[in-house]
Image (tube, rainbow, N blue to C red; front, top):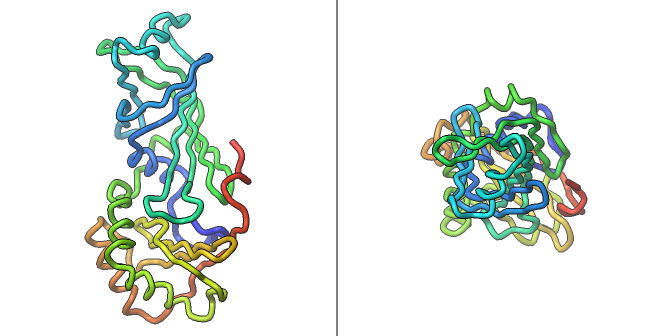
Length: 243
């Protein structure tokens, strides 16, 4: 996401962004009545976005749900999307999902959703439950981290070439550029200055179907005439977006 999003630029919807984040996430923070848990590798997400927790039977969470009134437990789940490359202000988004945990016969905990909220540097979005259930993760979501780290570590020349495509539109003084995000629509670069940064989004010539096709689109992008990128400054960090 760029700091000043252009509504005419194709990008993931808020619901798709949430589903993409959940497809990538291996951990979450869980808040229940008076208890906080950090769960790593203990949840799964179904095709319609159903979230299931898989606690061990001898954990405090399992004990808490066993003694919960009416057999359900109010819960707040927090997921954080952190850029895989070592750039400034790495938190790209946060997702908060509230609902009620209900035990299943196999010992897992099903979350009955009540509310889904997406927070990004550009604002807060309430996602409808039907919209959330019908949305799909971006086809690059699961492989995005590997793609971005490979691009940063092995193809910094390509990152430079992508940056140079902005020509005179990019303000003077960029000290470092790293890939920030990639989805089926395009790639976003983080351009860092001595103070602050801007995000430069470049659209693919065609929508990418998968990671291999996205690599082809990056190479095609480098052979086309320079496009009109979307670049906006952000002088404040994530602390300006409150939960």
